[in-house]
Length: 413
Length: 146
Image 1 (cartoon, rainbow over the protein chains, first blue to last red):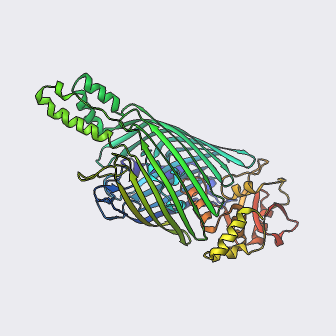
Image 2: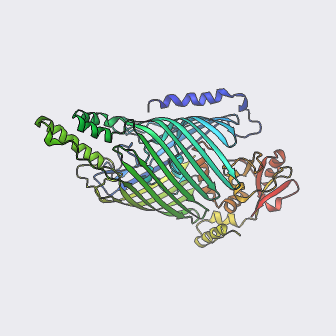
């Protein structure tokens, strides 16, 4: 993202300069600067050689077609600098190097914000934060913090735009043993697709609630944004050139200018020796994205340093179809382009992800600050659906089954 | 004994994979303490755990709470997190990686041993720590025990 390298340094500098006097370490042992990081080294194998398995549509390649064993799916390394300018003012910048839309590992800024802690239970942040669309969204790249290799793609891919450039407020309430945190945020975000075009979320607003009672955590999220998808603009403009029927189709399926709502509920129960987690999310864009939802449930047991687990995940998409432009009503010289547009529309509407995954795996905390994980997934694609697979080749058959095997080492430093 | 720690002990004993954890559970009892001058009268187990895990930064009476951890590897530390929060050292690490990398907080400052905990509590009436029950004296007030 173009803005990113420019946004990092000023935020850190501003936080230092705003309040230099309080940087003296009187009572608090909080360091003025702290440096930390995390990462994952992983390989993934997929049995489907005509498409790629990966985690997000913003990645250009994955395991299966592009590589039999891909290190691009999960591998990443991230560094974070925190600046504490006194007890109330702080700033954080976190950069993540992982496979980007352009198939490079140039670091991108995941977090870059200034935080002001008004009271112990109330803070505001200005800058970039990760939206807590799901229970584990905010730390989804910190695989060390998670029992499994990665968050289930059926659920977490429902919200491809994960960050917010804007403002956030967070208020924590205490009721006896219960801690409830309410967060609100507002802003914009621009993401780049693997084809180099941009997807933009404007007027992005959300409200999030996290309820914690001992080992129980319940997270509820709602957010909405006006999306615009540059890659499809000329496609829908082409439909519009065909008059009223084409305009109606373009208006129905373009996301541009439409409000895309999203909601989710998630809960986890982790008393220590075992854990259970479940999440559900849904969005309805009233555009080519259609109505999508996903859920998963998973759990595991901890035998000391070894934690085997099992998850089941499902993604649903209410399949839509449209006959497109009536080719027979068009002059012969327009029949070719119209047929091409109809086929492309069919492809877009038919690519809604529906799939079921059963995953079994284990985590081994083999060293302090490092864990080794193995995971096997069996994925059944929904009838006629390509699931969440990308890079689909002409020989790819939707609705099939595949096996995915992953091995990762997660670490923090 | 609570069912949680009982289940954990049975699991670790049966499997025998976690020599570190097993050693931790055989340590003496740990109690949560504040300075004798701290006005707080009572604290539940969850409230104490929330303070040490960065989910809360105050006592029920509204006064700020400053948690004091013991150094990694200290027997009292492993015992505290295992029996009060049900978390092994690795799970506590995983918890803090969630907090640090989302900008929500940093782990408590650490001291070397029980005696150092008492020193911090004497210096700061808002401090809260944990130590071996045998180290309890008139300078501290026990808020939660196992």
